[in-house]
Length: 178
Image 1 (cartoon, rainbow, N blue to C red):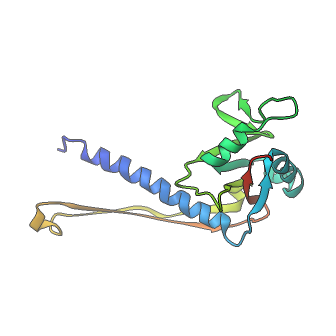
Image 2 (image 1 turned 180 degrees about the vertical axis):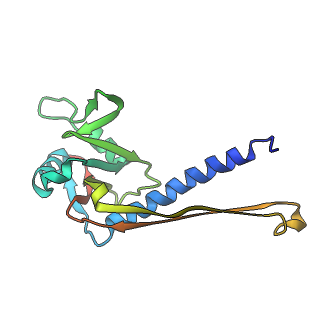
Image 3 (image 1 turned 90 degrees about the horizontal axis):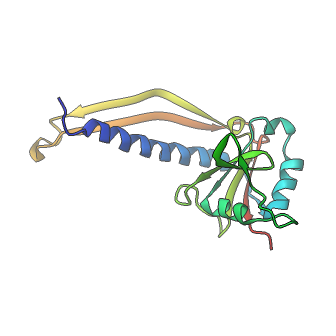
């Protein structure tokens, strides 16, 4: 019987790190062979959403950016001085731009590109497929670290991310309106 909560701690630690690894692979797949579209301000973003994306890509569309990109969008104002981001009345912690929910990732996970914030918008579900390969593999060895009186635990997650419909989303960078 395990009394110290070790397995619970390992589970939380593994899940957090697995999510970070999965997100890194997803972002890499979404960037693959795409030149970032340079956007300056919210008007260029809105125009790109309207003109560059097929309307079907907006059915499950989303905007994904980092903290810097969110700050850029959250600081923008329309011609009457109102914020361009709106609150989602069904989920108060979610902000929307042009009807699309905004998902924010830490700058450490989704790094800036040449001082500008990365941004993905459109149908990312169609843009990349996440494939699980056989779930998790656990292995425990009481012999491996025997000389140190330790037990080794190994967890391997099998997954892959495949870039799919590159026209379903746009990868770009965004900076504040001049």
